[in-house]
Length: 357
Image (cartoon, rainbow, N blue to C red; front, side, top):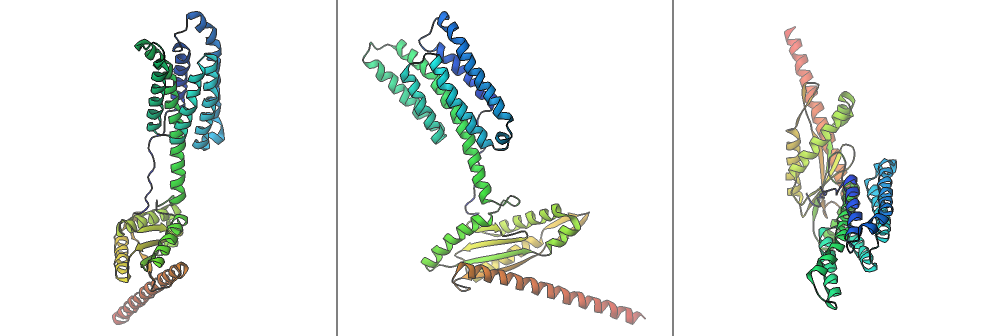
């Protein structure tokens, strides 16, 4: 189907992994910074340990907040805020040089803005170039470059952690976007998304003298399923019909759930002949559905109506109204046929009784 939305699968590192990475970050910050001696290390340890403890407590509190638990996006943003607040504190207490501290700013910014591994690679390449250029005016030595690279390791950890945080936010944003365009039960487009796309397609067709078909589909007597078997079983019928419709249309057609038991289908470039073929295909595929309710097999039927632009009307609302009226005419026709067949069967049964008597 057109405009199919896909969700990301990767959700980033867990909170415990982030805490472990921060512990490694704190260690590298004051061990890698010029290989400080044991005395200096001992004097900084309480302050750095306190900063890490604050981070762990903050993450633990955020994990249990109802708002954060209900909204993963808020939780990811809160983790990021805490990370941005704690890292400079740890860096300052560990005596990192001013230039190295400034390198944290583009690292955080790039990761948050892009949320991709390419941001990590670009940031590290720039950092390596900065190290090499910084040492050009001094006596160049491999040892000095290695030491400088060790100083950059914490920044790499910051990239990794923040990339995970931004990945959480990006995943949640994609999920929210997909849910805003999709019907939760069937996975089809909802009417908000369908209407927006249909308006765009209608404008293209009217501007370029094109044509399209619009089909309306209604599940026949769905309320009887709901009353007899419950709404959960009625939802089974809706999902089964939605799947049958998806199997009946082309890859570039758009299908949406119009309401409780109705669907709407947009067929770009289609005339009446193709619309009739698709309509019949939908009816056949739905008829082939067999669902079991209380150990009894039940068949499902649909009513369909179609409208062709521009033959059925000029405006978009005219096209939709035409298709809707055609669908109800189809429903009334099928029910009248069923009633006639029922009356004929009853008359035959009565005639049989009279002959026997």
